[in-house]
Length: 371
Image 1 (cartoon, rainbow, N blue to C red):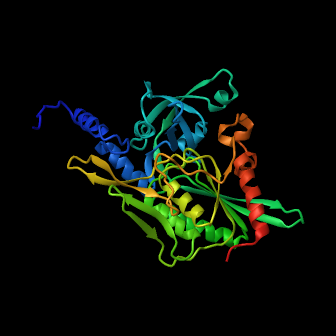
Image 2 (image 1 turned 120 degrees about the vertical axis):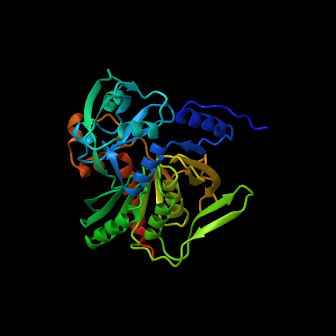
């Protein structure tokens, strides 16, 4: 028997549906409002109207932390930094919100403003008195280019200048693979001999983008990932005669903020012997979801299967264990204000995980490049 009940608003309907979906025991099977779904689609396209900040909830404490700021964006110009804790948006507490819900409040029409209150992350790391800061941000069109690069130069023991290409991928948007391909080609032309691919705090995005990025680094008909349905049937997803852009040694950096497509990419490169993983165990989101847009513009995300790595290792609720641990990295260290103004290369030199990655690359280079 189906119970009929009147609801006073769309929000009440979404709440009722969310309650029913929660009985399935899968936190990723959910309904999102039309506004949330529109933002999801815009974010995947690589542009959004907002303040240029990435936010995620820290699993252990539940705090909403700034993971990154778009260089030159409103948040960056206002002095917001990685590690700052978001506590209020327009005078309302963010307690109980996840990263996406908080991001929704920060987005809006170009030219409108939003006031945010934060706790200084550097003070929190030092264990001293935590300062609050309030800033008013004007929303802009933000180009969510997911990729940033730099070349780290150093000299080997014999005096030879070595170049390591550092590639940071913040999300898997539609442009991720094309930008990655262009970056690798450019750095190959500049004489780069090894690479560090940084997937730390990358929450995922478009799975296809993750698979496309993997094919930039792999050859042949390698298995990129396996899917397993509710009956336990395993189906591999393989490349079709891929050709890697480079065979130079590769280290991939991961941490507990690396999820979904990040884990697929890390697993593909690791299990196929292409990369060494350095960092911390990843988040552990290996769900495959179908997305159905409803008549009112809302969307239903339903988990229909899950991923396994090429070597059939479980990802969901387990994560991927790196080959080499590194702790702490620069994001969890106290950061003096003057260090925030330094160049990207200087910041990388202070990152202990980058140092560990460079050591691992040094070992790989003594073995010779793969062919």
